[in-house]
Length: 639
Ligand SMILES: Cc1ncc(C[n+]2csc(CCOP(=O)(O)OP(=O)(O)O)c2C)c(N)n1
Ligand SMILES: O=C1C[C@@H](O)[C@H](O)[C@@H](O)C1=O
Ligand SMILES: [Mg+2]
Image 1 (cartoon, rainbow, N blue to C red):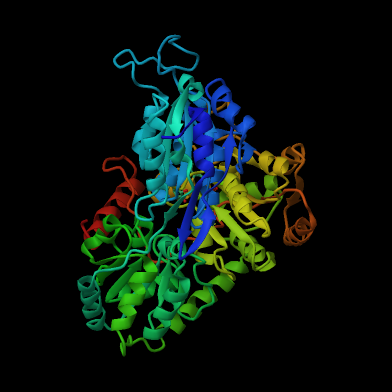
Image 2 (image 1 turned 45 degrees about the vertical axis):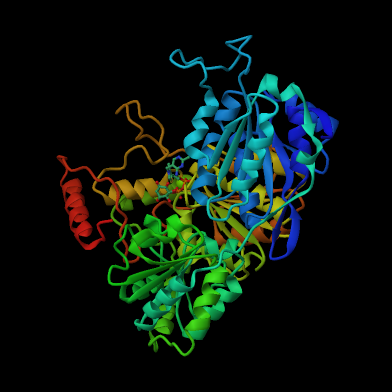
């Protein structure tokens, strides 16, 4: 057997360079590069290997391990899971910072390869700097905390373990049915230890991402079910995008006249203006999709996980039977569905071939529902602050809005700003988001004019994904303008990869909606009978001892200017228009700091979200919210 003597880290880098994927006959290198934040736990191992011979790997420098791993996830998501960027961190806190990203990737079924440094396998110098030292179990390190949030977890405690660890890592990273975070913990001594690796370990490996075909029996069942229904509705989930099945999906919908609603991950799989595209569905859905869903007799979920946001906590399509087409048996089996376990494209094609002659019985309902929502959108675009202004989220802070107007020096409403931004961005621009009130507004209101331009992380709704995500999307599609749409809360939580965008010369644009608070949480608590508690950004009031003092005003534009970002302060529509137009001319990253009034985001459209309302309270509002929950639960599926 021919061997090559390399350190574990050198062997890892060499192996990563030799991995390819093949999808529909097209081959692509799988690992584009590696994000690094070096510390003593990785610099002399992986760091040394990358300095000496990175091969074709692009080596990036992250700012915060969570940020860089979020960027890596966004890269893979925008690449439809066909290419990744790996991440290496030091031991201890650097590793721990990536745990949130691992969970985010796993919840979203997006492949990321995390390579945290680990404590010494030999234990000779224990306890090393940044080692926790659990007294009940010395084999535990910070990296064990990745186990519950990874789809594959391993620790390379001897150099030769690298081979089985990495082959299994690749198995999971390229498995469309069950991918997510892969964590390979690398003890810092082992990274530098040498081994005579068999040469064949480094041969070019092509991992075929296969389209799973459905069984004839499952297709038969699906066809019989559809034929027995008059008003089916499709759901376009993320699986349609990852399987690159948009053409097939549209043809299926058109051939049988079946309308479709979008999930956050599926949105922009097909353009918003398609006559059968009803738009966002569920808790953050619009009136068109939700009303058609309510009356549908069959829901056909394609590549969706049926989260609570899609099903309105299982209360939305209670009259309907469910058919699923999903490459994952787990997801296909939800809601006691008739299931077709298959790749989205292969599954749809097989059903289509046997459904010849079928037509739904929709007449004018689809068009009317879409028109109704368009009229509502026009109203939302035009909402202006004025005398006796009642915000969309009414009855919470109505009396405080003049104060907000005064301190933020703005009368802008969130819905009108979204309309304007949507109008002004290039059709090909990619918008990235994750948490807060924006995902709801965008799922309802954003008009995707080009396919695959809506990039929302809403499987985990991880605040702070937005800016890192924009960087990842930009690395994936460098020729497009990429915009992070973020709230002030998310921006403050994590925006460090904005600096990385400057360092890499990869321009991203931050559109920051500053309503001085955790707006959606404020809505949620007040909708459920609480007061405004710990969600507005107000200073501590010495008189009450509470956070009910003056509203905090933060000059985000000024702060980002210090980074070298081109910034704009926006307080009216004219400034917004000028800022967007000018930002397009820039070559560096930009930030538009838009002050918007709280409570001016969209409200729900005929949907319910099951949340943990208190069963016992002195407050009448909470008591009635609890009663509401109980009565809503009666209308929902029990499981
Ligand atoms: C990492 C993380 N922490 C906490 C939450 C809970 N959470 C969801 S939205 C939100 C507030 C978001 O505030 P902001 O970004 O300003 O958006 P807004 O709702 O004001 O539009 C919080 C705290 C979360 N989703 N992610
Ligand atoms: O807790 C949450 C409430 C949602 O309204 C919000 O969009 C989401 O970010 C979240 O995590
Ligand atoms: Mg906010």
